[in-house]
Amino acid sequence: MIRLNLVLLAAVLASAFYLVHTQYESRRLYTAIDRSQAQMRKLEAEHEQLQVQRRAQATPARVQQLATRQLDMRAVTPGITQYVTVNEAPVAAPATPAGAEGAR
Image (cartoon, rainbow, N blue to C red; front, side):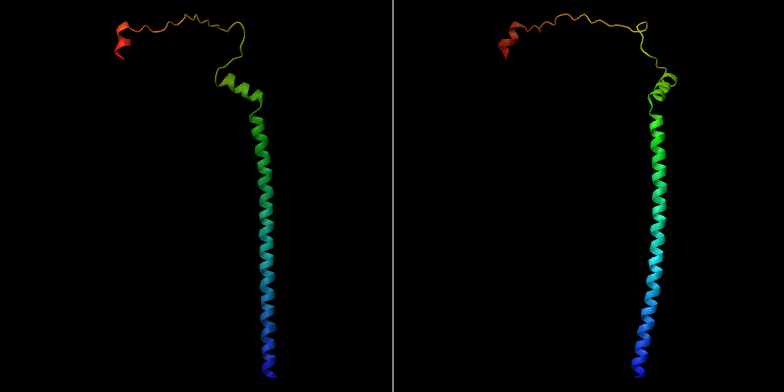
């Protein structure tokens, strides 16, 4: 009977230690999940902020400002437009010597 009691006591102690270990592991994993979710929210907020900054950098007014300041570009006006005309002369077929045709 004493052996049976000792075996049962050992089983109860083992299950108690296992329960404590499982609860500890569960809490540790829960805090890891909570930390990961907080980091995810932080990264999403940063992503949104970067998207807003990117849209602000690509506005037509900003592009126009950069073009005029850094590239010295200006808007097209009829006063500064130069028109180029091309006089196309008819292209004559290359003349082949009369003796070259018979040599082939």
